[in-house]
Image 1 (cartoon, rainbow, N blue to C red):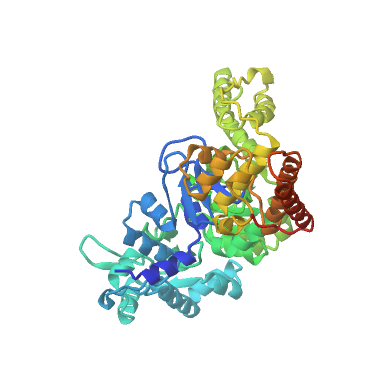
Image 2 (cartoon, rainbow, N blue to C red):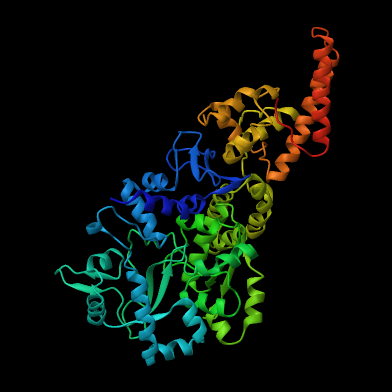
Length: 547
């Protein structure tokens, strides 16, 4: 049984935005993140991830929980399985109450990679290949590039190190044939360790240098390795991606290594697979522009077309850079064409424009029937975009086909959406305050010294519901989904908002008491002094407690 201390220590390391964001696309909404709920069918996002609470809640179907609960529900795992999966992907050692069942991380893949790196130093052929490709020794070290020997040598190494063959199979280092015999997955290949976003090794890519049938192979799918959710070198590129708000996506490991070597440290690569919808949550992080740097051959153009269609339909900004004449980014850098490469990367073909152009290439536009088919396919694509983009790109479709834009019917239909409620200024402030309490629950106890439901003029009952944590209250659900209601950011900003609100409140109370005839003179004098004192203290920038 996993110890509770171990579970709590793992939870402290997890960030729910990273965990949930590795499965679904999250979009920032104030200090929280939103997405369509992955647990029920919906079009409008009602699933909210709250970094302050380290929790998620769907205002549609009511599911809620923390990082562990999300992995349990999404992966259909039980509690211990979800914990062990999170521990494995975050390089965390769990402790168990029964010492005989202690499952400390063996660091099997890390140990194997260290050995591969040492073998690379001893293998002249592998070293010469990397040198010929223009890769520096510093890049070999930074990316942890190594060399996998023959299958018997790898099996012998694992046995000598007393590394579990069961674990090696689970993590994709070795396999078992139909005859029951073990074999190494990577044989006589240059190896590229593949890391999770947290930086732990979860698999390998391998390139043959001895003529094996498959030029590249990757680790098989496992509990910790899903090539459709991983990008090579993302852990090294992440800081540059967030800083530059750009990401270069290539097709090969060597392209990435060479691009980083030349200063393009925001480059990553897909793992021998096409870009898929499962990559989008990772690409969305930091909201960068995406630049696809693909080969200009037939296969490269086809891959760029599919990826551009997916990215444009998903609202990503960026474009395509195709490398013609058999060259790729690695070749250009090796040949000293870094300035030319930089110029290419700054002149991408926008995704939508590229998709439309590639569509037209598939048709003989001299044939009226083929032209009509091209028109229908283009309209189908345009309708996956926003109305504004549809109108912007209608003339391009018409121009490519040599027809009038009026012959590109988009048929916009007005949706009968419910009219939004027109809140007053006071409504907006009170609702923003309540939304702030929901998203920043740690400040609640402090603020209750200065404000309570009785002070709010319009939304006292919603305030009470928020304090009681009734997030399934329909009014709070609507509040959390309404993007017009902002969250007060920062302690100082919240304090200034409260001072303004409380000043208006106590001025109203002062005006009321001065015109009141139902209290004694002494009582009225006392209340006037109290309210004036509070107002003066608020003017000095001091929050005053309720009395």
